[in-house]
Image (cartoon, rainbow, N blue to C red):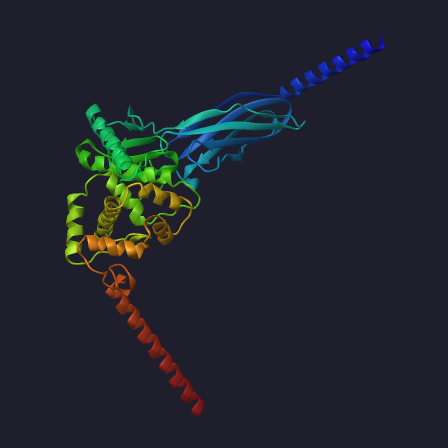
Length: 409
């Protein structure tokens, strides 16, 4: 009998404890939750909750859907006045943090605590950061989804076909493919595109958000041929980005741009002409000089794009194409430019430069090469530096002479 009583007491205590846990969880109630996107500048999160005691703390926890080596969640304090029934909000101001591409999904949840120490975390909800200024249509292939709002179905189909052809070239030439699907937002003009960006540059014709697998480009139906090349080029960059995603990867500019140019297909005729003129005049930039960046002037930059294509084609045509993904993997591990080339091809950038020039019928690189050393400095700046130096010497001379006269007196 005593054991039965003890058992009943234990069961009763368990029921009381379980009931108290249920009551504690129910002490805070979420009444409503919402998020309003104001593309491209902000997302405002709102909620309303009540509790048996005063609500003292409300945080918003959110994360964006993107490629990342480490999943990242952000937690921020919401604005509210403590009380038993409260309304809270928080605005993500893109003007302060930088914009998001259209179509980005943001997952969020609320963390609420009251004065008695009760806490709840609400179920996850999702808001899409869409550009609702336009009536978007969509068309998809296996790896690419294209959104557009101006032009007929055939316009979109040609762009999708160009994307698939570019992916096929990348897979056949160098054995590299998209690891995650890509999304293209096709704006009907450059002006429309600029209106979708936060603090855009006036010259921007397209922009890639590689972490999100999203690319936005301004392509009008009347500029279709340029648009097809632009899509192929950006896909080339996206494929290379996904293949080398790591905290350490640093590719030479000629390799990244060369692979993107190769994704377009044959070199544009105007760029081929510029390359031919530089070969004829032996005014090519060296491979090493275009590893870090390209010149700011248009002619120099265009020659560097053409050269990058030529160097990458040299590697593909003269070595096993399988070496390109090997090279990307070495860069992914954080190798330097020269060491990566040595590991895969057995030559550094200077060795590559010599063999590439030889394939073009050229001898050793002239010294200095265009864009390297003193020759890269405009002559007007050199003259100014000389004048300033002479004036400085004259000033010092006159000062010393005056000082000596004063000492004699």
